[in-house]
Length: 114
Length: 112
Image (cartoon, rainbow over all chains, first blue to last red; front, top):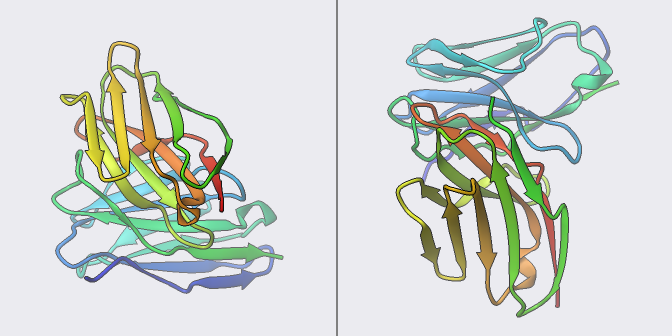
């Protein structure tokens, strides 16, 4: 079965650079969520999209932005990177606007800022 | 907002023993409680979930119980195996929105 695809799997950037993370949800899933997980930490919700519109916003820094495209894939854009942005970034998708339905996580993108 | 507490942070058991992980939540409006297993370098994988209209749910060696009055829920793994070793996260979600608040995670180590 198709899963959530994230790219790239690993990314190394220098401070103050920009990074773009991509997420391809499971086919027919219209809702995408982004999470940030620091070392030894639980996943922290950043932002979500439903039908290409932002639906919820969590602890996403102003330096980050995201959008969902017409094909439902989503991109997380991160600017002015800081050392503290080094983390695993997960994308999850779910069908039918979310609610109390199961969401499936991708394998994550490991971002290292040096 | 919702606050989820999870204990213990680390749990070490012998193969074949049972393991229990406990979580409490703060918002009585939460009605969806998923449990995730995260292996090293991988994304969280849903292993079982429970909704507020159910007190207990079982799937083979894993079971989850929910006490809405006390606002706590627990994961039970019986006959543990080394491949059960991973970090387990509980989560709570408010009605109408999937977005879960995660607990801090429990690192389960099953010794062969």
